[in-house]
Image 1 (spheres, rainbow, N blue to C red):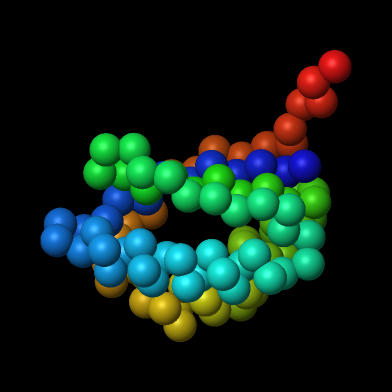
Image 2: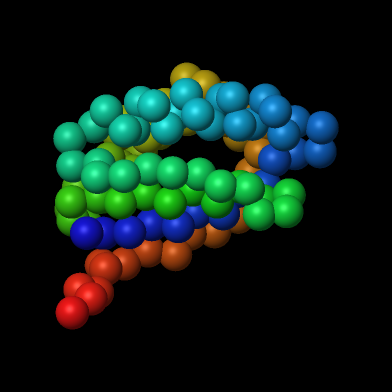
Amino acid sequence: MYLVVSVWEPLPGQEEAFEAHGMEVAKELRNQSGVQMLEMFRSGNKRIAVHGYKDEATYQSLVSDPNGPFARAQAKHNVEEYGRWLYSERGETVPIA
């Protein structure tokens, strides 16, 4: 699995709106073929999104493509009006024996 952990920060006073709009993006992304998991949790004022994809190619086609499903959902739900992306860590998972 290709795992991505993204760190977001809601803008001050926009925490509820950020989560509401972000959840709409998550719903759209979860429905894409090759998305194996998508969860979010709070850590202080940060929101951490954990995404699992079938492989890196799936991630690239869904998320990295500026015209792909993720970019379209972000624009449709105006997430960046309510929060900002800080960074992401990503890579292939290591099988645990």
